[in-house]
Length: 199
Image (cartoon, rainbow, N blue to C red):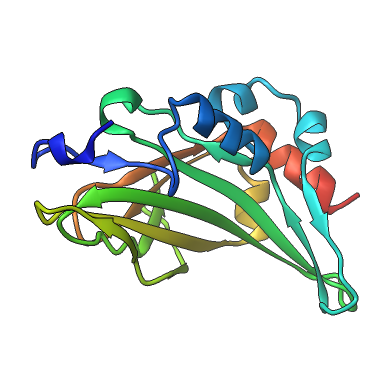
């Protein structure tokens, strides 16, 4: 895909390195421990739990649990390179055993300006605390289009996650523009993650 030929009205959201539709990128995603949303939706909580990565270092005061990342589906990935991915993360304090839960989202897009994603809300208009990195510029073309990468972290209360183990979560990240990122977190994904953290 030649980014120089994209019309000004087109919006491209890509992973930082390559399009999801290319064999090289599919390999990259597998190596980075990512899965498709359709695949995760069909998995049992047991399978999700077994795929959770656990990082426990003597240098840290907490144990970090990271669920297998999920690549979101797009309508026209080949022509626009659309993609975003998310993962659930938990940090368990080694002494108190208290756990902090968060949702991490990475989005890379081609546009004239950064989108500054800073708000996460659900269908009941409930908003969550969000931490976001300053958009990093990967590269720019001669037409003024730049490829930006943003990483967003949203703090999710344990009670909220537990209340959505049966039906999953539908969330929306929004920022300075109307190019919102919609995320469906399957029930099995949440349930399996809890199993791993509490085992």
